[in-house]
Length: 155
Image 1 (cartoon, rainbow, N blue to C red):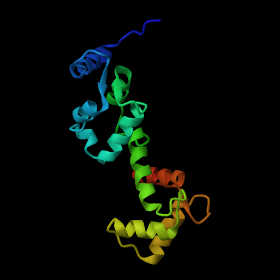
Image 2: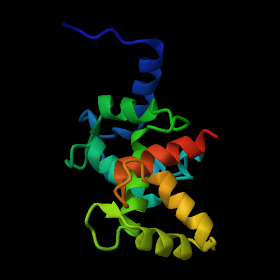
Image 3: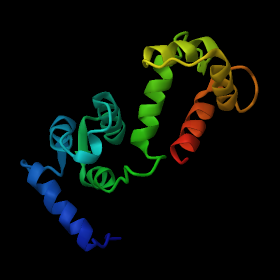
Image 4: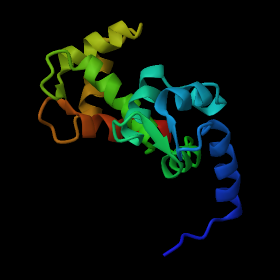
């Protein structure tokens, strides 16, 4: 069954064709990165976030086809739960989770906040840790971390 292209799809196909110079129906992930790295909406993301997303988008093949190109080009970076933001949050979480157990302890959180150049008094810090520890187990999972960052970003 043939897929009907919309006007937007046609415009995206034209853009894709500009980069698909050898007309194979795919562009290298490296060339794709060079094209998108200057996008104003993407400048807020760390370069490693972009690289991780492109690798995931290409299914680790190193090639981007039209459907993958379209998926990326129509990604709404203003919404919190996009793949790019999730990747960036996971990278931040993993940096703070120094013992790599999949959780952030209060000690790791304090160290992470200090490395970020922030100083928080002990009583305020305890409140922050408690706010992020939804299940009360004394540590923060990635799900608790991302959920609470999302809540804070909407306030």
